[in-house]
Image 1 (tube, rainbow, N blue to C red):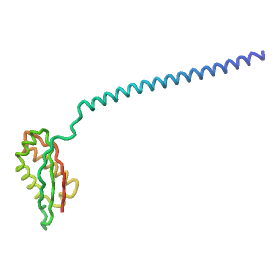
Image 2: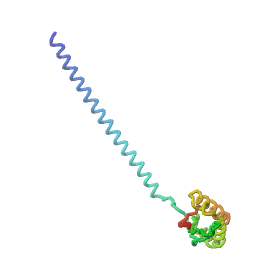
Image 3: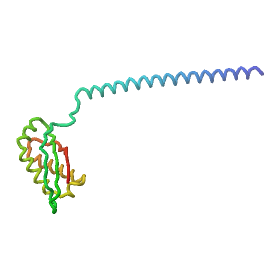
Length: 160
């Protein structure tokens, strides 16, 4: 009877060893399968995304129309402050740029009338510049109907 427990202990060790070997193989197979599936799915996702990007690149900016620089006196009591600003209009189409060229005198007059009514304090803050841009955009779109000014860019903004 003394030998039975030894044989039984040896078979337990073998079964534990066999269990860990099988567990290791299962983990390796699961990891390998997961890696294979991940790379295949990721590769197909990237290639679909890549194809979509190269199929039709998004338009970053519309057609630009540049107005000549403006130099105006600000509405300051001392009369010694002026503003120099360069404005570019983003239009939807090239045809709209052509019509903006024809409307240049109206657009320039609108800008001059608005800017000369501003004070130094109105133009110095970022909020003031945003307000100016928003108001000009609204006014330009009234003049340019049915065309639309998409955005206004200040390419130069100097206050002295």
